[in-house]
Amino acid sequence: MGYYYLGAQLPYLIYGQTPPMTSKAFKELASELMGSSGAALLEYCTLDPAPPKEENKGAAYAEPAPATSSSLINKWKEWERTLRLNLAKNRSLKLKREASTLGDAPAVPADAALAAKNAMAMESPLEAELHLCRAQWDAIESFQGLSSFSESSMYAYMLKLLIMERMSAFKTEEGHNEYKALYAAILGERKLEFDSWQK
Image 1 (tube, rainbow, N blue to C red):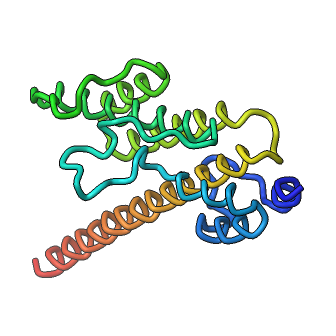
Image 2 (cartoon, rainbow, N blue to C red):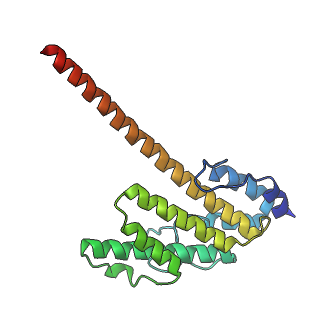
Image 3 (cartoon, one colour):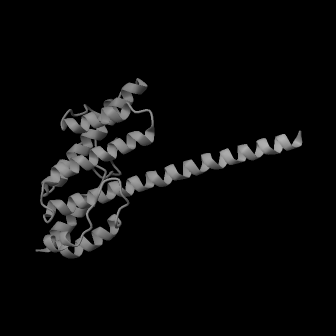
């Protein structure tokens, strides 16, 4: 009952748009309606496949994340771990370094491994990040299934909000870089005008 009531009042999420609410606001709303066990799993809905541990000297995703009672969260953590290990492997190959501390990069899920390979081939870091965000979004949708009123759909919603927030940060950074370039161009034109006036 709680999932239907919660799902019915949530705005539809569209990839590439501004998030209609923050992930924090969603978590507060969902925590009231999902029940304690369902709400507790929202803490596992992160873009990090395994939260970092102080005693862990290497990458937090070197070992698989502990399983939860949610198949969506488990699939997501496995997908994201595969993505990150393949990114690390491809970076190491590109820089001609050894990535032995991370172990072997899994080949499955194949779409995660492919997303990492394609991102590393891109020239623009922003373009690569956006490619990864799209791949993450698509993976979450494939794990979610068709229902908008299930426990899994609430976890998928949380993860999608996190991706939208991340993409909003890229847009802010991109806008700042465009402003700096425009400002530099204006200053350059002013300097040319001043130099020609001096002659």
